[in-house]
Length: 291
Figure 1 (cartoon, helix red, strand yellow):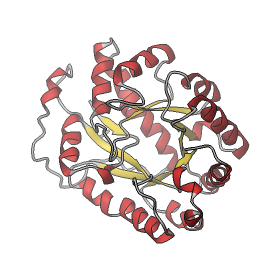
Figure 2 (cartoon, rainbow, N blue to C red):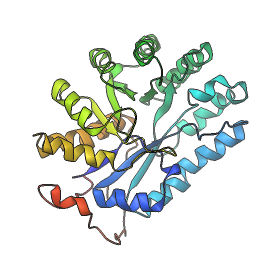
Figure 3 (cartoon, rainbow, N blue to C red):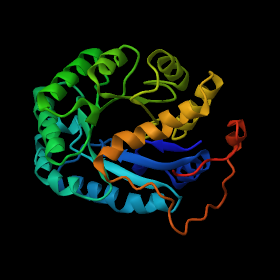
Figure 4 (cartoon, rainbow, N blue to C red):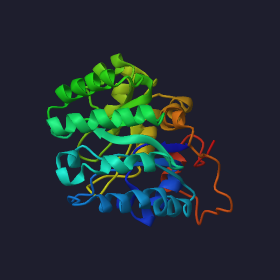
């Protein structure tokens, strides 16, 4: 099983997580810029964070055999803080960097007028920089927020096939499927989606434009939820090609639109131990390769 986790916040994770992810088959990931859990009070704190995403975290992932990419944006939660708005002026510098494969996370938290303006402006940055966009749907009033998200996407002129609408669930998947945008699902231990609900959605809607991620961050989350979703798909009767499409081919196809993905094996990398306890369940045993 080869895995590309298309949304995971490794800044919040440990080296043990990297080792477990590699052993489970993760060979590449995308880390979206996000809210760190405490309000940032200046543009400089954002630029330090962005620098770590394109530098240090990319280097750290490579020590564990994993190709690291990121997305850059002013996130929806902090779009409401006037101290943060000047971040928009520095984004173009980062959107031109190697390893930056989309504008994101953008979208809504509380669906305020400030979020409207910042969302629309950042979609225009995606158009200007020829990058896809990763969109965050709100945690509250999700269906209304998702519909409003799709309206803003249509107004932006960004092609639906270059937009990934994330954190979907059963009430929101149909409207995104109809829009032509990619559909993202975050698999969590307690909230959002779990792997068994995800399998039910895949049975109903198929595997096209479907993106599954762990979105693991500083809260209770699990960086192996992509792997566990793959197991649940196999147990439900999906074949290995279906699993590969959802966990590898789809995220590669979406983020590949940036022309910045690097998926070859890391030169000189030797894993300290490739055996993962769950891999014997994988109808084939090995943890897979990178392409």
